[in-house]
Length: 91
Image (cartoon, rainbow, N blue to C red; front, side):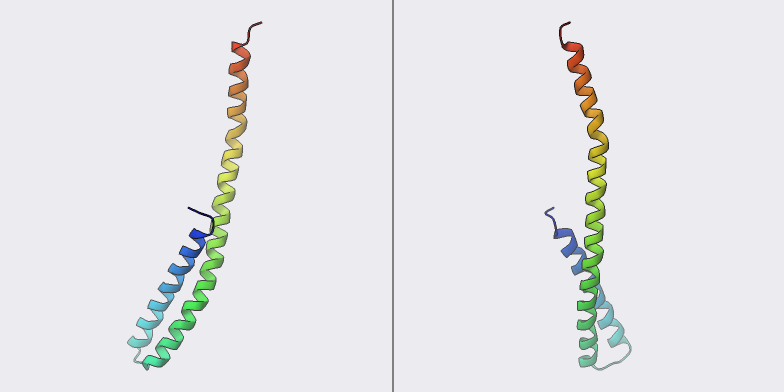
């Protein structure tokens, strides 16, 4: 995935989930539709911002983990390549 796509996806999922919960809860409580919609829109915006933060942190954590994993494996690959070339070189 391209950078930023997981962050936007997570933010959108958070926002839509908050919207659905606010609408279901408001209508279930018998509140007027205009009030339910207002609260749902505020919830959508607030949870999109929260989801953006969570997504950014998650994307950063995955990136750092991958970077460390590659760095940890790189010296092993370098030693193996150096060792095989030293053995094949004529003395």
